[in-house]
Length: 367
Image 1 (spheres, one colour):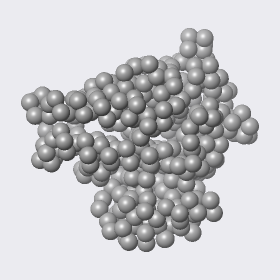
Image 2 (cartoon, one colour):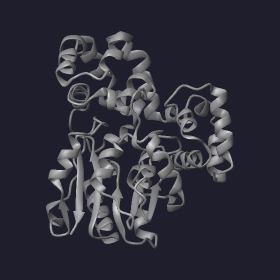
Image 3 (cartoon, rainbow, N blue to C red):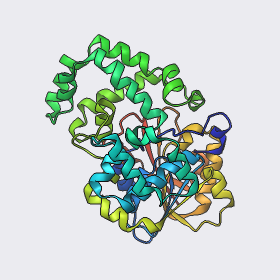
């Protein structure tokens, strides 16, 4: 997160207990190579760890929120100490008894810093229910799943729409059985700017947003349920069921578990705002940037200033990847001689984006 947003939002809690950006399109966009040094917004840690699966020289994770650093640290400890099935139990991707999750945490505990150990020791309920549910945003989605979704559709309908259907079958089911007036009305109310700002994110996160929030999210949800395949979408499955049924995010897939574990020593993390890290740290040249959607929370002026810092810390050919949710951020024309948009590739990847609620995926290359 940038320093600007820290002046108006509370960062004493976990904002996001999972990364809600699709690491599959991120890795395709960045094309990480063994010699690369990567800088990543830490968030909950998933996408930072997914970058390790490509065996770069180094990944540097940065986040101003100590709660998010605690999420990253616990994931790192889990990759070190647990088996892959146990990792999924700790996160909450699969069912597990609360006591079993507490025992898994105890096995990871000694690998945490003192600050992160204290953070998680004080939150046994967050561990018992699965650490992937511990964020403010995930609790908001839990409210939707428990109290709103059942008012719009039966369990059978929810199960049906998550099945692997053909595109034609998905479109027909959505039109004839899903898109009823209850769905449209309650979705618009629950995902309004007011409700989402108060219970899911923070009102200050919408400071630079002008577009309609609920209408955008409703249309992107239609896209995820029809154009994309819900049976292959871990983000949609978690929203609807609170688990990963038939799909996992990149970092949690079994084929990536050992590569990530083998490369954990190539990861370092810093609890500091992104721009402060770029300004004060003796960082090496950065080849690849995972910037989440941090520019969403910056004024255009600060966004341009941080772009300048990122360009200075990179080299020709370095790539920047980031998302727009509702506030448009992309390279200004004043930087056209220093930063080149890779529009064709980013547009292609955006159409595949399983974290479907974003309005754009941006990929730019330093000239």
